[in-house]
Amino acid sequence: QVQLVESGGGLVQPGGSLRLSCAASGRTFSSYVTGWFRQAPGKERQFVAAIRWSGGSTRYTDSAKGRFTISRDKANNTVYLQMNSLKPEDTAVYYCAAKYGTMLYQLSDRYDYWGRGTQVTVSS
Image 1 (tube, rainbow, N blue to C red):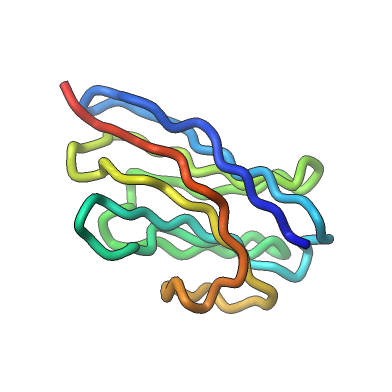
Image 2: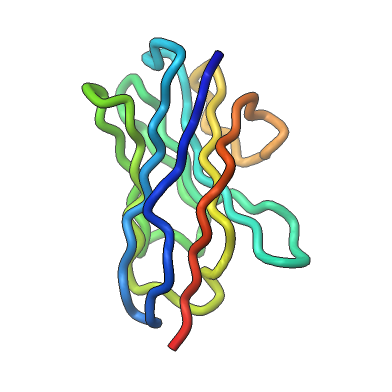
């Protein structure tokens, strides 16, 4: 069974940075895609970024391009989301998700495995 555990959230001032981690276990992830999603109160879950374990291809939502970077550490089965130039509108619970295959889907219902999330609050 795939398990995903997020960490690294917290309170940061506007313009600051955070690095989220997603530790994955239970599978060999070479044929998986891992994504980051976020959900703010009263809003739908939103795609942020995704990465293919094999090859490292990435995809970002427009609001993340140029500010966020998704990466993976194969040796430690961990996916990271480096977030820079954070804005108050980035405040949300951030979830890590995984799916078997190679397509970098943006739709949350394409992902089979989910972590419990980590809170990110951007406020002065």
